[in-house]
Length: 250
Image (cartoon, rainbow, N blue to C red; front, side):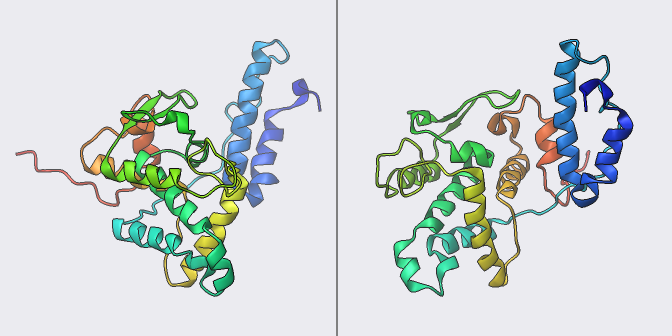
């Protein structure tokens, strides 16, 4: 199909009859990407109109899962003990995947950063003042200043065993950064065991939501940590407070 032949009803069918019938949220994301591509094509004179504009997207429910402090601490300790290998003592002795996931989870929460930023965290980003994260998407660069807890986690990351010297803070045993897919596979195996022990499932992305929610509860600006230009996006996407609290007017 030529770009000029794509019409709004084709996009609508993709969203609601085909891809969207199986994965509605993913279909929304893919059409958003397609819309961006057509914006470029329109600017280049390839098409006159953007067929994605105005097409109804699938409804999405806001995620409400909120990890508690006690729950996070317990999960980190579970990871550190390689709990997902509890029934295989030989593998448990030779594996430290749980430790690497525990450290990644702590960094994600303490810095409020997305998984991609944590997995690609380079040692050159470690400064005397804190951890410097570059600009992401249309956001701002952020410097996450040191706290005793964050510094301790970073020092532990630096001591992770590796067959070669690695320039990444979170890395595999051969010194390479984890791919998103590889890390996700490790996370899912670990989370499966965590749930089988009677705990509630959560995603790596929920760690960022917890960070933002805790900042808002403390009366701090979440955007200073996340790098968003305004407070509206962190509040809309990541604020997981079930009950909003405020003092009486007088």
